[in-house]
Amino acid sequence: MNNVHPDWIVPDWPAPGNVRAFITTRAGGTSGGPYASFNLGLRTEDDPAAVAANRAALRSLLPQEPVWLRQVHGNRVVDADAWPTAPGVNADAPPATPEADAAIARNPGTVCAVLVADCVPVLLADRAGGSVAVAHAGWRGLAGGVVENTVRGMQCPPAEVLAFLGPGIGPRAFEVGADVREAFVDDDPGAQSAFVPHTPGKWLADLFTLARRRLARAGVSRVFGGGLCTHSDPARFYSHRRNPVTGRMAALIWRAPEKE
Image (cartoon, rainbow, N blue to C red; front, side, top):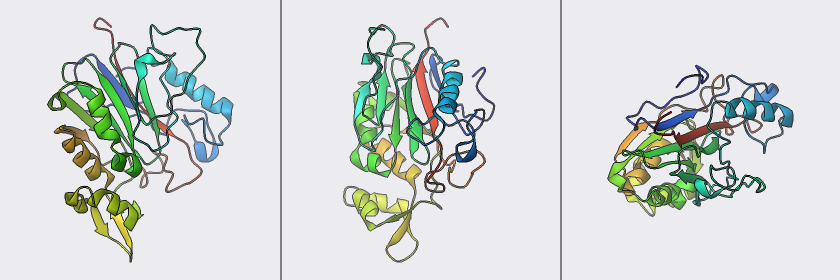
């Protein structure tokens, strides 16, 4: 994509020509200290003016303001076209921040977005280019069905959906307890392949494998990306597990007009 920072991630996937998507990194912003430099998270302790400047720079690359979410590690999915920032919705309405962890859009220009700092962003598009979506997929969201709910909400045959997994905490860094393992294995015995014993009562979990399994359960077989570890690359990525005081990156996706 033109004009995005060269360090940012543009998905390498066979999405239709009218689908636009990218994922920011730490690079290119004005925040300082532990938030350096392109922090987009308003719910951090960063200087609000710096976050606002970063969001303004991001906005300049988009057809309109993203439909930001108040993420709660749940499985709720919203129709981004229905929110005040979406094209065609009452521009005089007050800004809204829906509480959800995934969003879907069908109208050209509606920008779906999630913020991440270890959880895996899952970008989705159907092969006809009629709908796009993004999900914030940490372990709680994955176990709760956020991926399946998002695919279902796209209202197209799952076999026609493409997925791209952005950066997340890698399988050598994500130590979890028995409760996390049981949340997946009790429901899907095959998910035990995503957990490696580490120390007594602890396992190393592979979020990318878990996301792929959930996508497969939802009927999505064409999955791209995955493998970029936020925890092991502090120069490029924010990681809440590595640094509890840190910023947030954004994963964004939208449908461009047919004639852009």
